[in-house]
Image 1 (cartoon, rainbow, N blue to C red):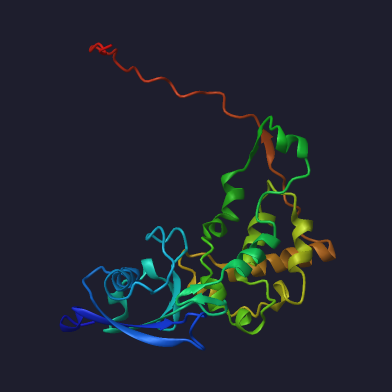
Image 2: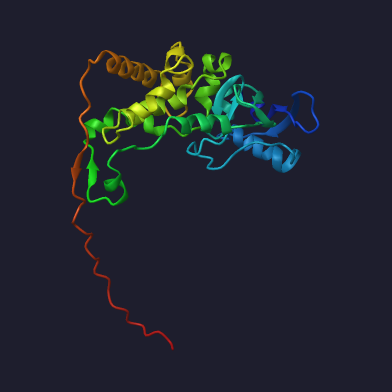
Length: 276
């Protein structure tokens, strides 16, 4: 974007209200811009100054919550993490994330996405219920064990990988890269014992085996997570389990909780008496 065109940017925003529109349409807004301004800043300007009916999600404004995922110039981005000047153009086309039902304008229905996420039981599962309910120690995990799954814990559940995935576009029953990556994240955790409870969900024609390894999910992820890698590692675990080969994962050891307490700081005594 050159200096003359940096003063104003035209936002071409897809609008759709199911209560009154038969199909989506586009509406253009001219937005004053400045260096460092994000696409989300532009949308907020539109809502506050040009059209208060524009609907979109936002929360943290710092690429942590994952609320503002949308299609910007035909590629999925977090609007708060994408500066206008990156596109070097005075026109931006903004649409809702594909592969998800539209609720209104740029807001998509994330319920199916989170239901799929919940189906792989994305939490630590253990069989020692007594220890889980009344813990006597902590499950120690070495830095080396953590390193095998650390990057997959950075997922913020924005749905961008689903929108970038060509398999999700053609197979509505596909488990999707986000849930599959999280399945691997917990199966690879040596504190977890729920691998066999998750495998029936992902070991299907619409699960891990329908991934064509396009890699679009990994390329689009705003947090640098590599779901495509997790899916291949999950396939390896499934095959190893089926044929009975591979190194067995060492379970996390039980370690007593730290006994040291933080020392009290030597605060001075109050010298001013409180009034009664």
